[in-house]
Image (cartoon, rainbow, N blue to C red; front, top):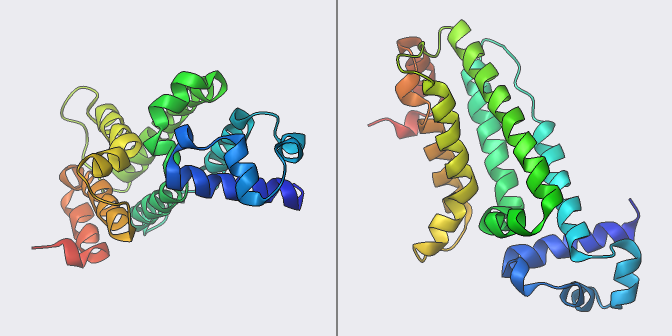
Length: 207
């Protein structure tokens, strides 16, 4: 990717995060970069092309995060949760404008529908690994871990919007709270062995 195209993406990401997609047009991006709209359109014909590139960039970054089955499996899972939270904050406009983007961009909507199923399968694989290592208990309710995934997905997609509707600003402390909440989602399902490891990973969370 050439330098101008990368600068367009970097500038667009900053503007989308600051103002939301509704207030950022190709003109807004071009003016911020002090280039003509025509120059910008040489690289991205439409604003949707920028949105799609940023979306797939985020997906690729998350895909690079790999969980390895080691003696520190639970710590690995929690660390990856932290990395993903940081990426969500870096690309936070997607979470803040998630519904509008999916309603107006068919390419992203269709890809996310298939991505959702892939993430679901990946989550259930992680659950199976945690059970195999004696860190997570077996299911006691029908589809218990599938529904856990669905709840966590809802939180991931709309947590930032919830923060703003309460009149708060998105900040580093917001991300820290989000990370803690996501990690604590697993705690009720841990075995005694898992809870012992959790306490070592997050001693500050213990009463």
